[in-house]
Length: 169
Image 1 (cartoon, rainbow, N blue to C red):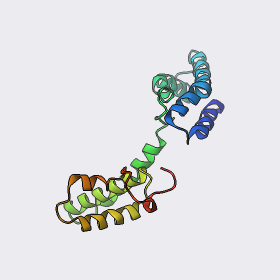
Image 2: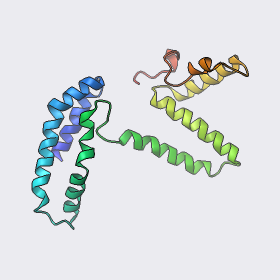
Image 3: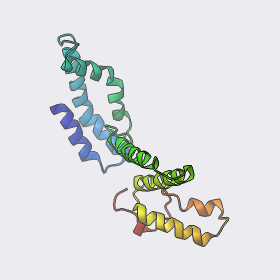
Image 4: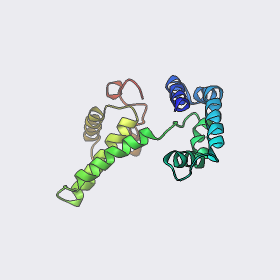
């Protein structure tokens, strides 16, 4: 557990660095820790009861070694999938709420708004302010806006006003 804690501390230190810097730091700091962890797990493999909880945990971890090491190879990747799980949790709550929509069109509309909101959050935007901005811009564009006009409203657009952005993306 100590080695896993160290890996997460390293990730905390490199959180605000570029992908290239994260990659370099992971090679210097994380790779030796992860190598030591898996070396220890491999030595334990033959001496634990495979049917015990600890034996099952060790075997599971060893079976996932290739995937657990993957984040070392790309600075864009996260050490875990916690952010993805958090995003999916919100969707699950929404899905449960959509069961009570009065119509399929209402449920579809709720899902679209939810999708836009989550995408805005993932792109470092204040979701309410982003939606208000987009709706006002769409009203001003009229009934048939050009695709390039719509492109500047996308959550990842560089032309969005600063006041709808959060401090950190």
